[in-house]
Image 1 (cartoon, rainbow, N blue to C red):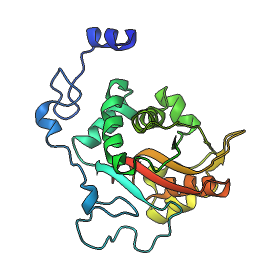
Image 2 (image 1 turned 90 degrees about the vertical axis):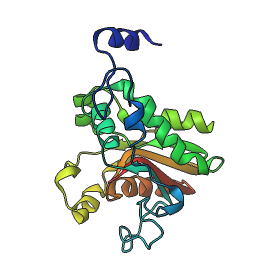
Image 3 (image 1 turned 60 degrees about the vertical axis):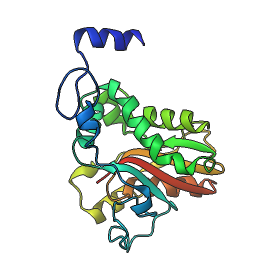
Image 4 (image 1 turned 90 degrees about the horizontal axis):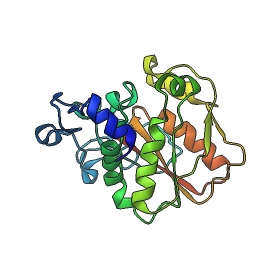
Length: 224
């Protein structure tokens, strides 16, 4: 246990993201209520929980990435776990989120050559004080036994949260660039915390493919 975690436990004991009871990131009851997505019944293209029906979420969308997987739906208590980690700076929740993402990626073990994360904007990084997606990528990479690589940088763009589906895709055009010296090679697993329309992951995947990646798949903790 790190000194940071030990001190945090003394002065601010961990609380369940679902019901706020002290003692764990998720109490047993809330852990049992996680809205997990069965990969066997999800859309292979966008990760939506569509059952065994044809997916209506991505029918008319041409993504640059070839496949997508999401651990769960963006509903409580998973949605609150993500929000408290990302926006309230509760870093002790990162391990639980990373393990959920790793579990979703497990069927792809042996496929990716490297894991990379969607980077936050400078404004978001300054506001939060840490890179919330990088810690998820680290857990996935360690679990799959492959390297994690920093490939992308972010240009200035409008906040996505208030935009429509089409506006999100337009907003992401040109929003990513390669980090200096980055050389995407082979098969890249690109990870993020939330998949909403797929615009962010699509924009990032296009940059990686244009720079030489052979194939890009994407994974997110939650599907909106």
